[in-house]
Image (cartoon, rainbow, N blue to C red; front, side, top):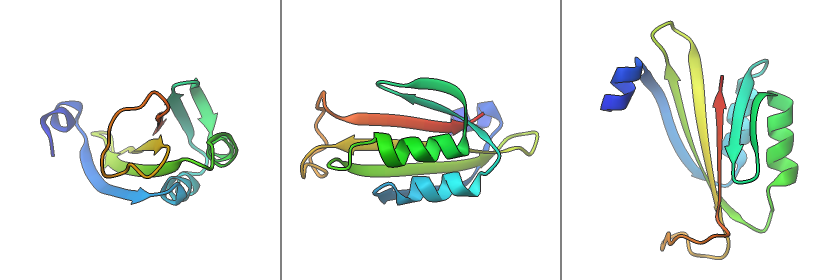
Length: 112
């Protein structure tokens, strides 16, 4: 557990990382009836329900990009379960190089 997690009073329960968007869709499906905050280059929305977040991932993200999904699930001091989903997308086969490109996509989805 890091210092910032300790200061916020969070205890990390699960931390996973996979290529593709399947992990994000799976986690969003597990958190039914919750609202999310979605933040990206072209979108900044609060109070998004789970169906709308799933629809955004499936329809609005370009399918010719390669994606990597990181999920952190944690519990707060008040025993509320939250999740943070970071999605990073890039063009081409440069997953090992990880150089910045203005065409990269970064998306954050977090529970409220």
